[in-house]
Image 1: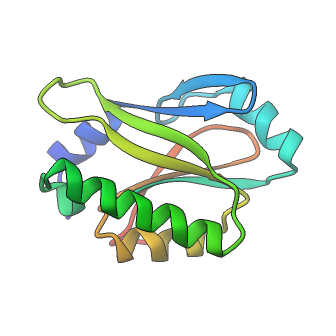
Image 2: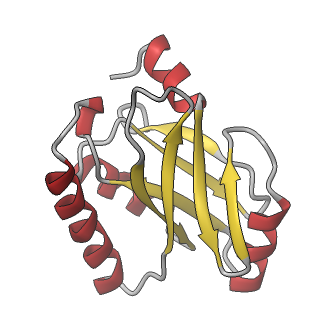
Length: 140
């Protein structure tokens, strides 16, 4: 459910990704030349950061989040997608780090279906420019 508080929380998060040539921490709306270069090297015109942890912004035990992450990773691998590992780090120390996957070349519709399957409120997406955008699952 989209609320001003939830939107503020997503915007107050660093979306860190282990790119092939080093790590980068992304912020919604801020350009990332490193991500744009990695996408160009991969020939990817779009991408998404997916997370399976804490569906609906409700905390789950660490073991359950780890199981869900493994399931998401396996689904993407079975579909032939390469993934860059990542972690979503809230600026607020009260929210735990969440493992994530950045998937170059993942069509937005497919990303939304996976986000719905794992109960996520929103995902981070973008195009070849490497500028992260917040996409709410309920309104997409």
